[in-house]
Image (cartoon, rainbow, N blue to C red; front, side, top):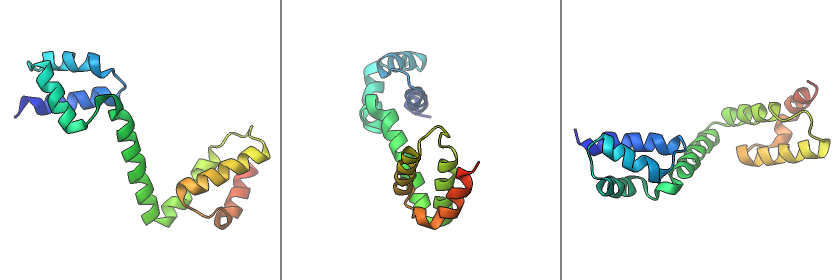
Length: 124
């Protein structure tokens, strides 16, 4: 197996865990007996800019989840209601309404279609 593969997997995990690429890369290169510049070059080709890797992965995950919700309106509605259920009870009526609108846009649902469920959640 190519020694770079396991080193890149480890680097990916480190970056997703929030480690600084400038510290993680030399350590991982040393662990795998690889030259740090060579690992950096491979990582840049595989991952793109290392300092934004974690955010780009999170954005991609969010996009995949949104695509899945768009394909399944039941999942979108359930996810929307779950997000509403987790809203802070300390929100004012206006803040809560703004959050419901924001969540409706995020989950691509019509809040009017879920009005009864929203009202039941509000009574808790």
